[in-house]
Length: 459
Image (cartoon, rainbow, N blue to C red; front, side):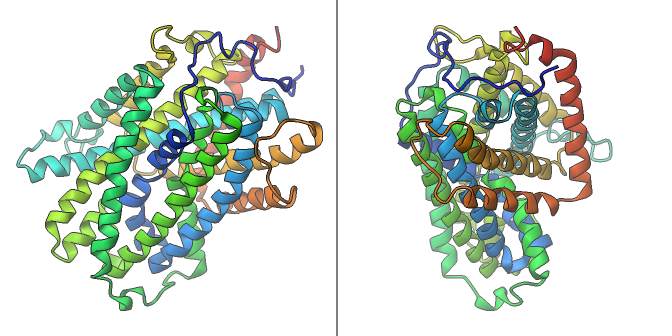
């Protein structure tokens, strides 16, 4: 039983036959990355992480998480430019480590994208309902949240609707998706800059004292928590087969989007904790709350609109990444190959798109997701760790591979990246680890009962 059979180092022979159209450039990829990274992290997670973990030291949490991401981004850039195929870390692992590790990583990424999309949709629904209430429109309680007998909620209808609308947009074509994403990114970057400029005049340096109320342990816990905010650049590499010049454009998109977003996160966290004492930031809309705190209610309303645009783009890129991942896994035979069929009209995997949208809509609409953000963090960190080690393996097993970008100081940088990701994983709670291991166990059962025999490498 050959569990570690490897894909040959080559682009898939049928990559053109399946019909994914190559229309994306470096700017499209950068906006996709910014679209996925700037969203829930700024508009929701900043407040929770400051109040419960890091205090004003949240800025150090973002720097620490950003440093781990920069190292991982360098590793992703090398592999994405060397193996420009759909599937991201799953595809790289298939060549570097073999089928079993690739399946485990693919199954892990399914969890990462699915849970992240469901959690972001819940946050989107909260902001949207707040906007409606500001206009005097109130949804019936039963339709305002996932099932909760005590609160009287039955289904989170706004979350279900936005997931289905984005799924429909994704089936229309990658160029249309990228165009819509670019418009939303412009809106939310404008709103973030508006918050920074407005909030700067209300910063009170005394709110930064004590700077580390929970000590460095709180900063590290905060970094592990806000890592959820950085997962977007991973989704860029899932678009590899739809990029016009992948060896050049993928590294540019990955590194530039991460750099832009890290700077914005650091500045926003400084301004936020400077305006409001960190103890008061455990709210669902901390950025808007900070402006209401200083009586800038009109700008706070604009921030809410920007938050809705921001989380819309996050959902768009997460669902996009999930569909391309399923496409790649199914094309290899590890999942039903019907999910790899592409529409000849729109050049998109319509079946996998609607399957992903339907499952996530049900999860978001009916199941409370309060504690699932950390599952996304651990899944992302695991993927980054494996990709970092994959760079080292492929440098030795495929030294003559054409690389559009090369990580400097190998193996030092990849090992440092892997160690950083492993350390942040270690600092996540036992509940998160339990859920993660259960998910991986279910994945192994699926592989043993279905994927191993149906794999194209087995045929």
